Image (cartoon, rainbow, N blue to C red):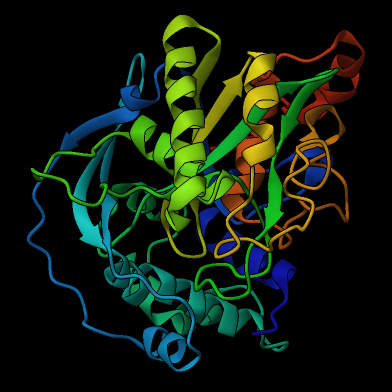
Length: 372
């Protein structure tokens, strides 16, 4: 669907307040509410896992279209936002169990309606445009401003499957390297635009033995690192290479050679789904030396780069050259996922960098420019 991203942001600004939307470097405005917060333990964000007896529609126009288009669909279990407590030491996110199709039929349908409205050149932001977003208007009971924003963070009225956008920062020769890739055209969610590797839906692992097993953001990141960076789901040598890299990373997290941090939370206002913003900083330069040759970005999720076996080319990019403020760069609004942009804006300042790069990147986070 071809839609005008600026018109989309203008419609959302009228509903939620433009000054509250995530504003990045060089005044990029993203369709999101953001809550920057720093926790040294990623799982410290998690509150209780609560039961959920809600029922959602079994299908939707979007799900049927995706089925006809033969997009890769997966109706696995997810963890969904049910509420957020603002505590003195940081937020606590409460979750329930959900399913991916429930998210498609509720949250992602909000995005579908919004983009249809944004594709109409006659649309002007205001009450008439808001009423055309009938699912969103009903969800917020017609509210705007602070009341609508509060509902966004509540998780009510939809299956708000939680995502995780992880800024991977691997120490290499001369500095830290990150991994930004273009999503495959076959995925159902945001095909063809840039995202960070690894990034994921927060979900329990296959074969869990109890309802609470797998309720760990850290475990989800490590599991997805093996699958997305080493294509471990292919089995065989790929699985062995991914398992070895993740096992060594676990040891590094235990002794300080690596860190897994929380840099913030963001809610994409297009579909009202939250994204946890993580930083996985691998400080041990030997990790990439030992495992870089086995890196192969998962082609099912991202456009496969034939140079993937070369960790110094194609897969990784120097973080000190990333510029989220570039007007036509990969982090510009509409060119990447909201989670990737927010994870870069909030996460890059947490990554150690050479002194020569500090002055150039100190503009990435401007006090007062990010709003919850």
